Length: 205
Image (cartoon, rainbow, N blue to C red):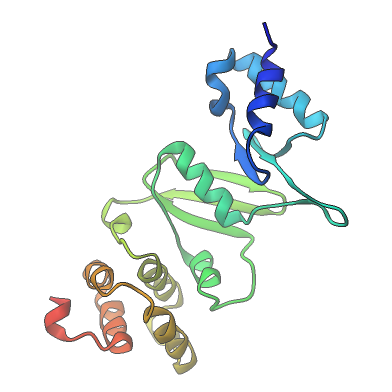
């Protein structure tokens, strides 16, 4: 019978590099203890890299730069998939994804319907904060980010440059999703999005 370590190695290496794995991905191969020990050995052999407790990367490799890492956004998405949770970026994370800031946040905060937790990835931290289902009910990727970014900025800090940037970005959002999501936004944000997208009042109803 093949060892748990061999089976885990075989399962990992059948996948493309750059994927993230969790102990639960191998639950059918052995006991929790044997899986933990096997992952630790594969880390020592440099097959895997441990990013955080229970989070392992099968890294892409560059001949000069060595291991290449996924973005914290991608790591957060994969953790959410594992937990069967819905997440949306908020605060500085939303601003960064919309390119309203070039500064990479040291703490990427996501609202979630899953378990609240903090995960340290190198010098950065991913924080999952529990929230209500209403705050997670937006559907459009762009409109969701814009709503969260505007909440972070505040009504008085949205200058003309930011408005022009958001106007271009919002032009790529599905009007049906935009209509849906604007209904869930604070009044001042709904009004601002209507101004930027030229949606008529009857469409916002």
